[in-house]
Amino acid sequence: MIVTNVRIENGEGTARLTATVIWEDTRRSPVDIYFEVPSAFAGALVEEGNSFLVACVFPAAEAGEKRIAVDSYVCPRLRAGLEMILRLFQRWYGTGQRRIALESAAVAYRRRPGPAAAAAFLTGGIDSLATLRRNRLMFQPSHPEFIRDLVCLYGINFDSDDSPATFARAMDVLGRVAEQSDAILIPLTTNARRELNPDLHFFRYKFHAALLGAAAHALSGRVSTTFIASSHDIPNLMPWGSHPLVDTNFSSADLRIYHDGVELSRLEKTRLVADWDVGLQNIRVCTANWPGSNCSRCEKCVRTMLGLTALGALERSRSFEPQLLTEAAVRATQIVADSQATFYAELIQPLRAVGRSDLAAAVESILATYRGETGIRGALKQLDQRYLGGGLLTLKRSVGGSGTAGEPERRAQS
Image (tube, rainbow, N blue to C red; front, side):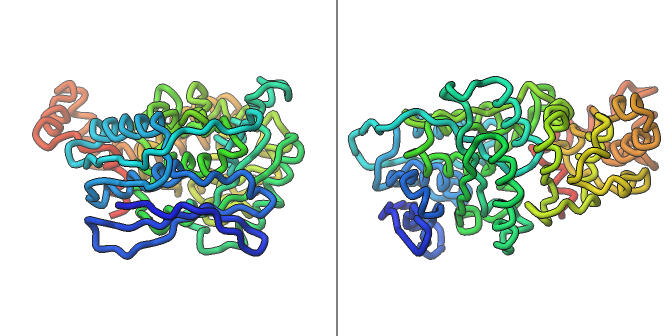
């Protein structure tokens, strides 16, 4: 893959950092990849190759490209970080994970002028809201890591990418959060996911944080520190596209990237948001409607409503319709991946503690279904544990293999 003609293009009310991507070992047509902002933020765009190397390296490796050559400046620190992630993915995902040579133009480093500034990505979800809230509790405005810019990235949400009106509404919803947090909301649009690799499984396990890192580098004329909110907490870390061992390696000499909040469980993050009224009133987790009104019925809505119920905060939030959270609604919810199951498990005892044993029982039921603890399979598993100490399961894994990261999710989607 060759990444060439890195340039800034000014349109009517917009500015784009653009590069042309030419596939070498794959039968695909050249394509322009871009990161676009309103003209007011044109000065944030940096005409370098960092953004495009981060955006292209994993799709190129996945497609079987032997190299990725960027004919623009790329920070050596960033290139070393990407090499580390490629080795990590090889460890996580097996020998099928391809290696790829990273090449860039021999351009001398030039220190960028301007003061340090911090940014974070904001979606309206629990993770990103908790990162912002904790930042405000930790840092005074004079501190260089006080978040001044909130980036809303459009182009990586699978359900609403074909509905630009939803992104326009984000400026109203998330703009209120930014205004009351003394921060500036920056809308940023990219076509990188759609054009380079639109596969959902690839996005979740290899591409998630790379797109955020690429966007951060695009804005590095304005931003020197960026926070990416953690997806999981320490006890439940798993191979994933955003991870403490991944995100920080998207940093360069000019841009430090933090993986923020890994020490907090999802319920602890929800508590931070529940105790912050502007956050509580502007939670947006419903992927189908993002960032519009939550449907209060989908898996993400139900999961978030359960957390708020466990904290006694659901009735105080205008973000959901509390009457739709019933035992039947929870039992109808389907868990399809370990990444979801970890969030439900921590809700059972807190729900019982606030007198919602009905919801706790429903959560236990859907977890049991996901883990294969119901029906004939569940009965066999219980017999195996009681009389054979789990020997049958151990034998099955030794004969058939334990699978690769994300296997439960792939089964559910097939």
